[in-house]
Structures are given as C-alpha cells and as structure tokens.
Length: 74
Image 1 (tube, one colour):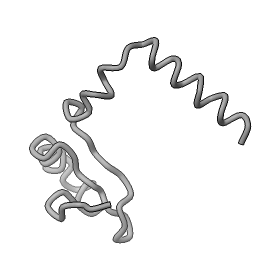
Image 2: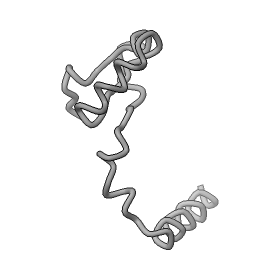
Image 3: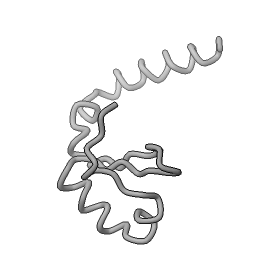
C-alpha cells in the first residue's frame, strides 16, 4: 500500500492536534494515523466515501447477512 507522507500523522500528533488532523482529512480525503511507525488507523472524510454511502439499505442488509453467515463458519 502506497501512502503519501503528507497524509500521515503520528498517534501523538492526532491526539494533541485532532482539529488539524481533521482539516487534513477534509483537504486530502483521508489521513493515515501511525502507531509505532506503522499505519494503524485511517481518518476518512465521509464525502470521500461516497460510493459506499450510496448503497441502498437492501444491499447493505444483504452484504451484512452474507458476512455474518460467513463468520459463523470460521
């Protein structure tokens, strides 16, 4: 996975300057939060997730049921 270094912040910076990190996510679409120098979390602007948000409730229900039944067999 390639990550632009301008979109990475440390966990410490995210904790201390959350407003700044949110603005970065608004400007860039997302921010990767690093923990122990490894990508751990992603803060995503909801508008950048538009395709996922456009799923109908029925499609979401079907996908959820499929994942639940798959998880039961694991």
